[in-house]
Length: 209
Image (cartoon, rainbow, N blue to C red):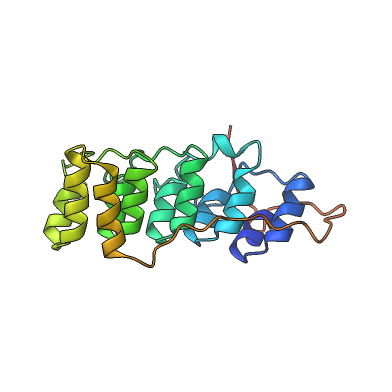
């Protein structure tokens, strides 16, 4: 749909105008992606912030796409800390499992060796450090198998119920340049007129019930 295309091409003002003109946020593309999935996958935090303000965002935030991935999983795979912060703040289920192998967002953060994402999930999202995939693999198993000593230390500290300061120090020492930046919405600059804002460019979109 035009909304999906505007998200993919990072046109924040157009996204806002389309939503104000009645674009249906619940429409999915042929791969089962909502606009939230596409924004998180592309690491487009400004656009994701706009989408999450929509009244229908709540019914999409934990909805899996055709590959069994929620928006939060896509944010992990794009290594986007700003998108993760937005999704956690909007109430995304940080412990949701992707449908293929049962990995949570924390598993994916460890797989990508991203201590900032893992720390955010643990400190801001209260992620379950002992969550397991369908075959019983925990995030710590992955960190140990990859030789990620700092991630392993972070996960062990979280598992022992250590003080937040201990975990924060591990994250800071691993990535001192990592700073959480606030996200701001862009104001609309154009109007949509009478365009068909929900028209699919592929003629085979899906609508949520």
